[in-house]
Length: 360
Ligand SMILES: Cc1ncc(COP(=O)(O)O)c(C=O)c1O
Image 1: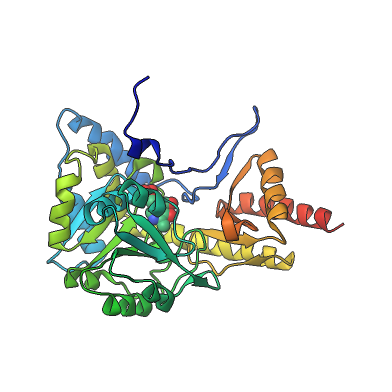
Image 2: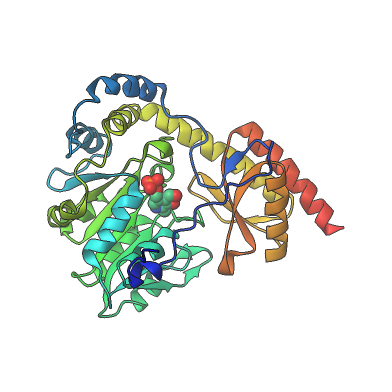
């Protein structure tokens, strides 16, 4: 049997959500933080018309998308927009470009799981700083910086916690970090907190900060695989060396263009999601459960114990509701994506029945 290199053989694959159900049960997907509704109807029209261009290779620079993103997000002129097959691709390539064996990637305790996988792929060490109250702590991050730290990732709002820190804290982090450390601000859920956070895209002008976003969440485009980031020119030039120039299909480019141009639809999705999230949270609090403050399209529900969290996850799976179990010090929690109102009301009832039953 052919063998991979020892380095690849030793890598652990990224663990996606377990979406297996008993035969005949209809899945209700609440485990991967996708949007509760389909993308703007304009996306479907754009995809149909994109087919006519299917003969040609796609624009490697995504120029049309670049210009609508600059407008929609008021991006300054001087730096570069890069589009990836999801922001996951940009995270992986950034880490490979800036970090190697012996170096350290630093992030906070409950950061998004893919960072550790991308760090292992680069052969580097992954370092995590404690969070307080499920929220990243800038001083704890700064205390972990060493001469080996090459890249720091701040996820704001966070996944799997859903909490957010004020962007003034992100600015303080950037100001204190050494200039040769690249700060990556992952704002995959940024559209859900834009209403109360001032943007940090201007930090990119310093040459040592990247801000990442995605169309997978608020725009309802997870299946189209479009993420983007605002990169300093020099960082983007290094990314260009590693990225496949034809990675974003014409279908994804045109779909993303239509989604970004329909800001009203996206904002409506955000409003709807946050309203349902609040109703669901109030229901959970009413059952005596605790929920971390969320600025995203999911909530982190804390149960009495890891065992209770595990049994609830299994009970919900039996009814087709797929929510995300957590590991380590969050194993007493479940991460639940906010779905449609009727789905969340039914889910709240199932959780109430479970909690009442397990109290007896
Ligand atoms: C914090 C965070 N960053 C990045 C991603 C990657 O998203 P995508 O690759 O779909 O753009 C996710 C997806 O769940 C996420 O939660």
